[in-house]
Image (cartoon, rainbow, N blue to C red; front, top):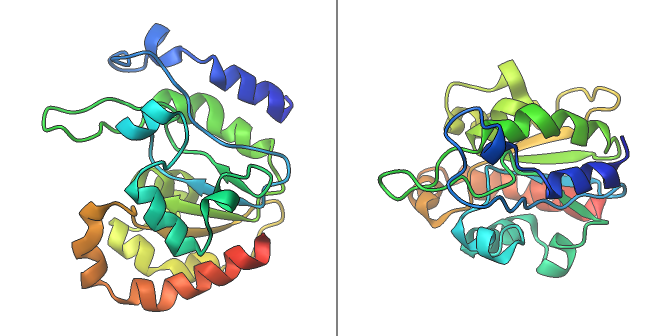
Length: 205
């Protein structure tokens, strides 16, 4: 199936309401993603939050500002689908748990769409995997026991021999303000990983 057809199907997807694998989505679906046949970089995070659900545009929040800073690019490149794809593990805001935090990404998205999307975009050369759900999908059994261990092993993933047709993978923590303590505790992330990330992003755009 062509990428444009897939994107149109996803835009109209109602699986998590009409045929949910768990409890139905508690609101109307609003799938949020950014894809193209030319983007060489893909950002793969968890799922839209409340602000993105309202805007319909990925990473329109302080986390997006920090992520773009990590990548060394501005909104004009980040939101250019010809240069950058954004494929979260869940396309719709999953709702809130009892404590007010975001629920996990809906499993219907991964099960129905992700393999097909990445098959339709063989030109992707680098995938940034943000958080445990994206890392589980893109790293499989190579993922470590914790997010910290996985991100700390970034060189092993990024510098691994490339398989033809498979992009390089670089694991990242979530750029949320909630991770400020994590960033202070692990200064190697900004000192060692981010310069490599910025250099690779500049090369690919």
